[in-house]
Image (tube, rainbow, N blue to C red):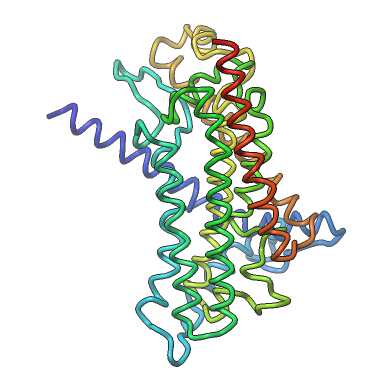
Length: 361
């Protein structure tokens, strides 16, 4: 009975940590980063007007101002809209982005107070398949948002969303088949553990797969240069044209949390997960043997969590840089890239990977 309670507490702590990092930290801070990074790139000051008693803190108080505005702004539902589905759609879009982190490990396995603790909420055998299955559900949220709004621009945006996300889900799924072939598992904890060997990082074993996966992921998240479902110059705001207040904010939160998910998956599949080159877990723990078994494991755990989220932060920065560097693609260009370039390349990558594995067997 005691072990069950301890396991429950550990699971709740991990859930709380993930929610605090994704929803409590990354989602709000990225609203500031979005504006501040673009301002720096464009030689502007950026958001800096919100203050508390004269202190502006580089514009960070805009996060609080935005949150207050979202909670207090009128929740407008247009005439003729389906009120129930109009309300549910932002929730359907947001929740899958959070749930995917249930199987994403943010560290290895450690011995704490005589108990083995793995830094993942649920270590599924089909963890990678779970990520794709849950993430694809967000499509329904965006499609329903456009349909339930009773607005032609919203409907056009939702149709673009459906066609784009379905198109790139095919390519994105095929780009990681090479990773599964190389590592021989869909369990994300095992993929991360294998990359303790620097020369077995996914970027070395599947370099083409990395670039294709990164491209397809950005398209899946509808970020510039793939933001045709929103396309302010064409569709006002696309599928969420008729949204305001907190529901409008939930769509933005979903987009930012998906950025974190993309960065976490890239880190986990291609860039060594929580590992540092040439510094194995056993070596790291041995450096702090003077702290005892539990103390050295705690240090290793904190170090690995820090390394993992440092890599995640870097790839979030890369996505932000792309967003403020490239112009929007035309819709036909987006479809051509997905079906005529990424799809054939991903299939070719699978064939070449299979040939190399057979040759080395």
